[in-house]
Figure 1 (cartoon, rainbow, N blue to C red):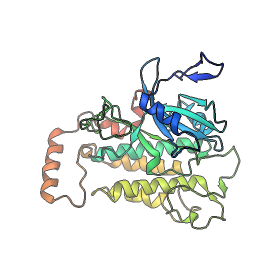
Figure 2: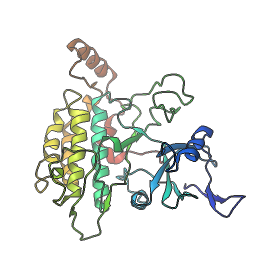
Figure 3: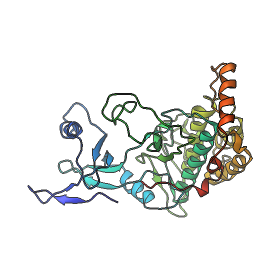
Length: 334
């Protein structure tokens, strides 16, 4: 449910019905102005009606982030992996600043992936999310690792500290996350400040600066137009390469997908839908029994690998078919 606003006792200006923790509220009051030392772009708060923790992002009206994010979030398609938007409100003192209220999410790779099936699930969800986004005419233009997060409630049901995500909610004590192979999470695409929405029939080949990833060949020159949808395909492929293939062994099933997604000439590069269609065929060829196989890094010893593989085999494949039948998954809604 969206956050509701209520009139302030001192004026007619609506105020959001959320109550940020005291220290964080001080941060936004003290530092959200140009004359101060630092601008805090993201903070946590608590929704009054149900005591749910939320995330509030400071948005410049120069961008179309709120409009695009709300447009994508309004679609209930199961393939939609764009972050939900629960509310937005204007800054009462800064006309060019507004705030967007979203669920509290966590970096997609914290904790790290632990089993082969977790990689399969992540790749599937992200390809679905990109395909959905493109079907709505939106190119993210910065689809990099920092803009991919997860709803970590299944693996961290007690939560975590917003500013110190490796600590318990009270700021003390270590986290003990569950394995996502047994407690699957949902991944989300965030930050649409660089996104472009194309109208039906409008060419997606336009000039642009791209995002954080400088590897796409089309970004080597800034004055030549490029396909923003194909840019997303490359940068997501780069996430799969750097965060999965280069970090863990025995993920050769990603090779064909990476070749398609990271073709240097964007004109010959695959589309999001074609990449997803190809991946579904690859996914269907991966034995379900391998889902629990522990991921092994290059520095891991052979002895460790043998022990881990034996443990995975002993635990079996109970309830793991969801990883390979993703369209049948049921999620808790945010």
